[in-house]
Length: 132
Ligand code: HEC
Image 1 (cartoon, rainbow, N blue to C red):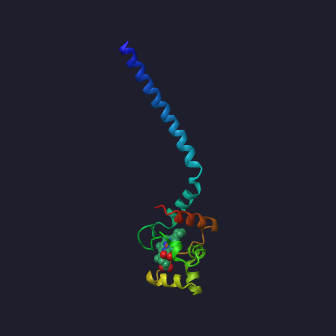
Image 2: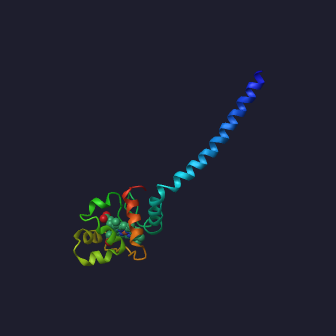
Image 3: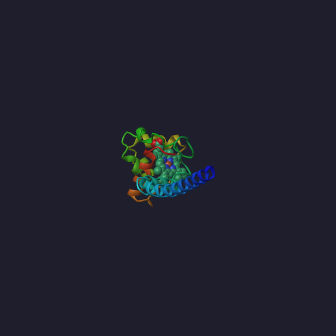
């Protein structure tokens, strides 16, 4: 009797364990596809184009990007700056961008005219979410 109980207990544990692992796999696959998609696209674009110079929390070859939208009086210009920073600086109208450029030893950030406006927005959304 005791042996039988032990055996059915073991069987139950095994069944539960197997059932759980199947469920987990299915659940993970589902959640990865839906809400993470936009952020992960921005994250990937950031990793490919920006991460060699920028981090979120620390200055690198370029300034840290944590809270960057609060530093710009017109945050819509951040997208123009990412696309072609020299054009914004040369325009001379954005004193913040000009001062930042001088602060960073007049090292121009390279233009990203290869990125679509939509892709720049995805990167900015990712930066805005503040994830490293
Ligand atoms: C080669 C290095 C380099 C790369 C690559 C680079 N940046 Fe920059 N970035 C800089 C530097 C340097 C500055 C400081 C401004 C200047 O020198 O013109 C800057 C400034 C900025 C600013 C303004 C920061 C502030 O404090 O206001 C933003 C926003 C920004 N970069 C976003 C990006 C994004 C998004 C990418 C990728 C698409 C990128 N950068 C790629 C070097 C880089």
